[in-house]
Length: 208
Image 1: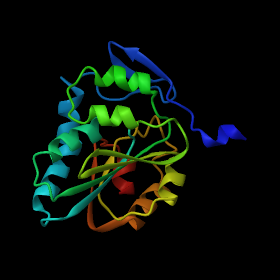
Image 2: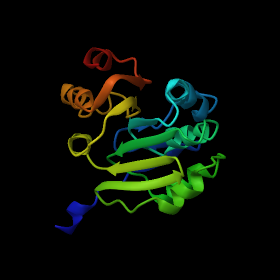
Image 3: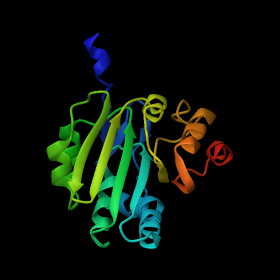
Image 4: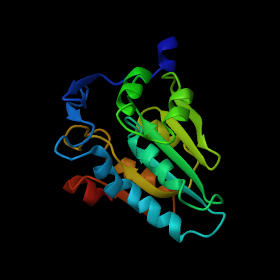
C-alpha cells in the first residue's frame, strides 16, 4: 500500500509553548529548565565539542542521535561546529519514528536563533520512510532517517563515534529501550565510541 511509504507523524499538543507528545504522553524537554537549549547543550553538545577538539586535522566525526524531535541537538551542534577549523567534518545522523510537521518545526525554531535553521527548513523532507540527506553547511551533513529504530539501525552503514540517546523516557517508550537496541548500537560503533544521554533510568544504565 502507498501508506507504507510514509511514517506516522508526531501528534503534538502545546503546553505553555512546550511541545508535548500525545503518542508517548511525554514532553520533548523538561519544562522546568530555564531553556531547552541549556539542558541539551550540557548533555549532548558539549561531549561533541570535546571530541571534535581532540580529533586530528581533517577528521570526520560521526554522531548518531536517537530522537530528532525538533532538531535542537542537531542545530546546536551545527552552530558549535562553525567555531572549529573548517577541515573538521561532521556527519550527524538522526533517527525519528514520528517526525514533526514542517509547520510545527518552523513554529518552534522561530523562537530561537540558529545559524542553520534556514537550510534545515528548506530541505526538510516529506514524511517518507527512509534516509534523507540535508547539508547544513559545507562540512556539516545531516542524515535524517524517518523510520522505526530497529529498521533504521538495521539499514544503517556507519561507524559511530558518539551516540546521543534523546528519545522519550524509558517508562513512556519501552519498545525503544531494549537490549536489541544496544546490540545494534555496539555493532555500529567505532572503537572507543561514547554515549550521551539524559536518562538516569536503571534500564538504560544496565543496557549500556
